[in-house]
Image 1 (cartoon, rainbow, N blue to C red):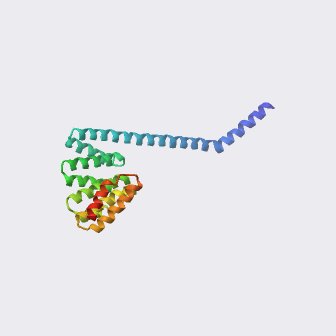
Image 2: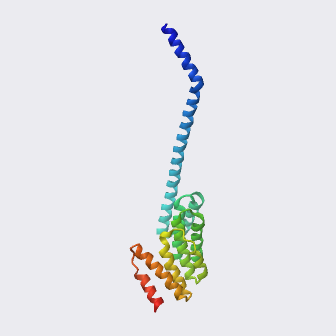
Length: 208
């Protein structure tokens, strides 16, 4: 009798396995593959960013000892292989600063424009716009400088945008527009708890 019950249970288990078991195994295998795939993807992304970080550190080292040829090679690698990481944008901003210090303004603008149009980080794009507008102001390309600041990627930097616009208007001998821009900049600086001494000097110049 016991053997008959055992046999019946085995047959039931066999039928259940044939009906559901294979599907469960497949589901487990699929889940395992997805889990391993996700872990591999995460690890791959981490490795990718780690490699980009190493190249950026090398770029920093090259900048400290002023080796522009090495910097150019390292930055090219960041842009071509690691443009999806923050390090490519950081590298381009660093190179732009290096070019400005060397009075290579055209090259600096090229790097800043790359950041504006090739990175997806608003803060980097805004910093690049401010840097490019400052260069254009120094080159007396006032309209282009204004156009560069028309788009505000990161509102955190609105006060700096307003202050730079005030300087551009001053250079164009438009004191009223300059005053309005400086007033906005001062309000933003005060709200952020920052010193307004420089802006006060600019306002005094406008109001003189």
